Amino acid sequence: MISTWETLATGMLGALCVVAGVFFLRFWRDSRDSFFLAFAASFLVKACNHISIAFMPRPNHASPWNYVVSFCSSALILAAIVQKNLKQH
Image (cartoon, rainbow, N blue to C red; front, side, top):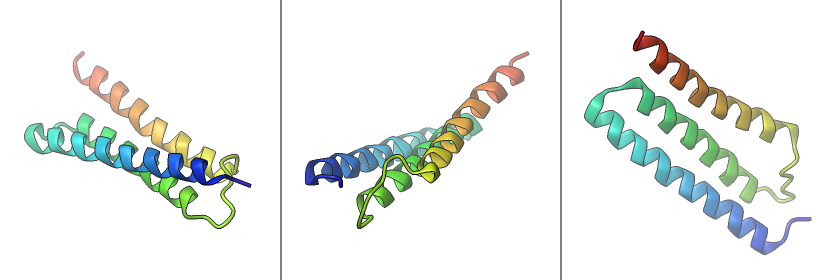
């Protein structure tokens, strides 16, 4: 069973991921570089994951779905970095 403090921390992580996502969206809007758009999407996916965990009646951080979502979010960042480096060559 998850405590109230853990729920609060999970919600705060979700809120901070939203802030980071909006921050990268601002850079994408100014530069139109897909690198920033991928980072924004990654952080917004992480935010949805954290917020959904915080609102579950019986949250489970060790659920396989949480790992799948986290992997996909990290894969977005990795793909953006690889794409950015391949463009420069």
